[in-house]
Image 1 (tube, rainbow, N blue to C red):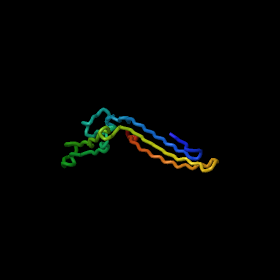
Image 2 (image 1 turned 90 degrees about the horizontal axis):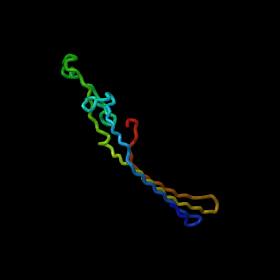
Image 3 (image 1 turned 90 degrees about the vertical axis):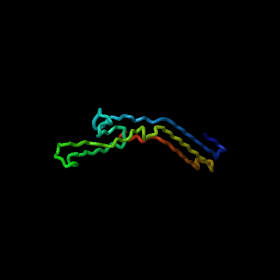
Image 4 (image 1 turned 45 degrees about the vertical axis):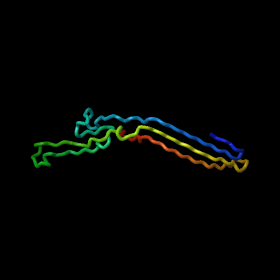
Length: 128
């Protein structure tokens, strides 16, 4: 919206509001062993966070047994599904206000402009 008070003074205001819902990343495919599920102790799910690091436990070395007696296993944390951590609502609100003043009859114009905005969304990283 804009309004000219005279040939020298005018104001302008804009408002923009956008709401929506972000894409839900819900694939739980095991990156190390496709087809495996969370029962696999070394599970590393695609949209599961906190399960990226795994370690191998050597039970023979821990118990002092000869190698191959008990064996070893690779384990990781179970992690959290993205849906349990994320808010999928997306919102953007922006506004700008301007005061325009032409002190002379030529092309010189003084503009006082202010903009503000806020928003929420999910960062779209490569691991998503």
